[in-house]
Length: 292
Image (cartoon, rainbow, N blue to C red; front, side, top):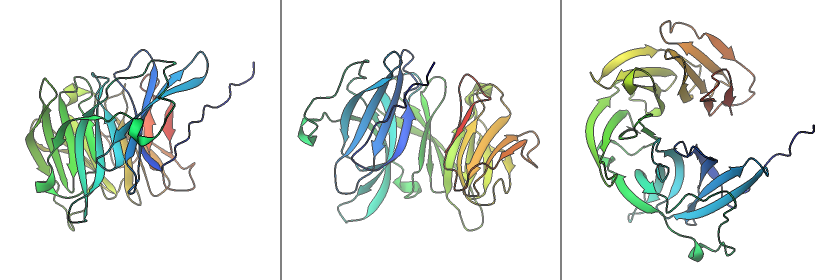
């Protein structure tokens, strides 16, 4: 039996953000966000048809700014968050974060309108804005609580902010802040929410190290100093084994840690010849990991 041909989808604009629609259980569905300073940015909803090895799409306008990160609600397939760069009236670029609602998730076989002009594309509904300006100007990540999706965490400069999402999903209330104080005040670059232990632990990357915080006590739970030789780019917890964490960074390495013994990684992969920007466990088979 011959291997199936690869499915390729092209974008007219540059893109740096992609997220799986976790709450969509019937089909394989992804969101892709574009990054342009000159044009209205777009969210492309891609649905994979396994029977025909093809993609369906729907395209929506994300008029707020260029997209740097996307994350989807684990329980509501129409809700997602975006971190975006917006040009203010004063001409400055500021990072913002917001929760959005998709008008609909396309079924397999549904295509966007033939006219792909911006005037014909539907706009996303902004559900609520996460006001983070008091805490800093850099918002690299928003994370959804992995099981119920009623809580959020956002990274802002060297702060970890916690939010409660209203039952109607129309507002988010700031409930707490953890400030990471280190020499030089390095900014948080990425984070991962541990799906185990009642989702009470969040790990965040600070420069070359990793720190984990207990959201009940608002205190540091553990840390891995010098986890990578250069900047840590991404983290992901093993979905099946509660003490295992994957990390990657600008040192071209992907590492796997048993956080009970953080003095050295359990496994180190050195297959990349350039920066490793992302690492992800397969949610069903934790021995299958993707790095890029």
